[in-house]
Image (cartoon, rainbow, N blue to C red; front, top):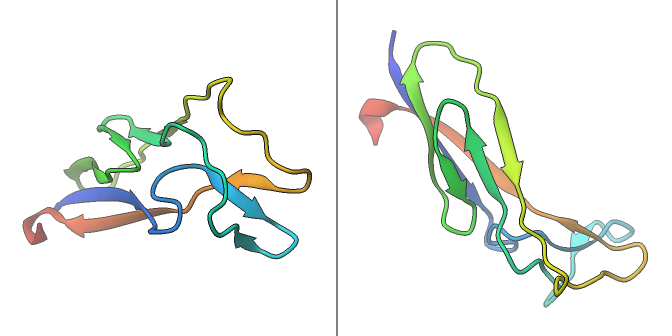
Length: 101
């Protein structure tokens, strides 16, 4: 049984924040709106990771099922999007053998 680690991060466009997306054009809006707080993800067992920072989400040995919880703070000052637009974020999960890191 080999040790492993899972890392989570976001992409350079959304930087961990739910960002304005136009599904009719299938793209993020350049200079578009975003929520004030970044999205976070938590693995159980594991760690909570702020997606604007990225980091190690979990580590372990052998095969394991990890429930994930996504958490997003919202405020009254978060912008309302134009009709037809929505908030999206891109998340990347990377699993590596623990001895590689």
